[in-house]
Image 1 (cartoon, one colour):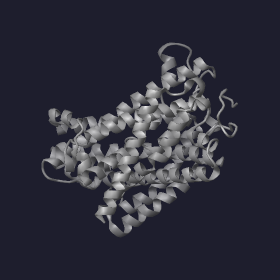
Image 2 (cartoon, rainbow, N blue to C red):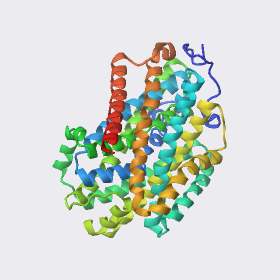
Image 3 (cartoon, one colour):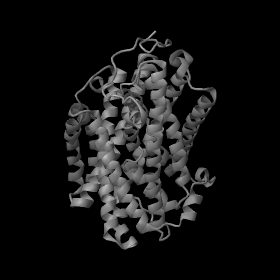
Image 4 (cartoon, helix red, strand yellow):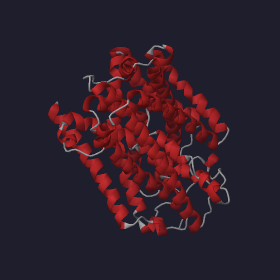
Length: 441
């Protein structure tokens, strides 16, 4: 029996990840302030659902296929809400994050495999953030893309400063950047004035998404950019930064309030992702422009919308998105390494390792193929993320559906059925993508 009062684990519970911020955020005693005490982790998770990788896939999807893929964004966000709820439930009920749960259940070879898969996902995510931030620096300040890619490693200093002053400050900084993104896209939507009837019809799924290989490739990229595998590890850990009561009643309340937090945050992410695709569809699809590169979208926005502020707002939102995602990727990397391997590294060292692994392909592509190849690399990184999803989703469902491990917090059979349906859909779409790519080569 572990510290949470539940059995079913092969190994005893160990020291929590991110021990320096574990249960460091106090909970208010009553009213709205008590609910507000749980707000924050969901927005760190939501950041991963609107990173520069989303921009590339949404811009491509909107400009190439109009509003059709809005249904994929909606479906992906609904799936994300369910999976993030399971992550919250696992962390609160067992006192383990997903990486620790895997370590305490699976054999060492399986754990090493899962860890490697997660590291690939984090590097793919970091690659998107690195390229996105470098593009934003180029668009705003004229910094050459190659230099921008090299400079983005300096954001580790920002993370170190924020962590020194407490986790609540990190959450506040992230929310400020999210508000910046929202304001920028509110300006874009006002200028674009899309036909809202067509937008509404875009949220209705169509069979051609599955039958058109090009559309399916982008759809899976959107799914990979939306449902981020490392977010499941991240959320199951940072929800434990709250000093909630360690009683069954206290944990039920924590699950309920943390789920409200993440659901509202993911609705915000849905709004931003949909806005990016709607902007691309309204501005470029009708004119026949298929936007592969973010730089191309920036260049065409001002003349298309008739206002220079459109291009500036676009670049500023991209910079805020890249910086936000860099923060959460670093925290997720710490959680994964500590959870799977029980190895603690200083944040700056962890960031340098992750950024170094993503830096090599970004520098190579930028140096040898030029700016025009970065968009394709961004889309590819999101497809890689989607391919890693089953390695996080399947263990999460296994654990949360086990009464031995979860006790009274075990998910119901209908929720488990929906979760397995989501997992099956993810696996099926990825298998179809692989087959299409093989047949097409």
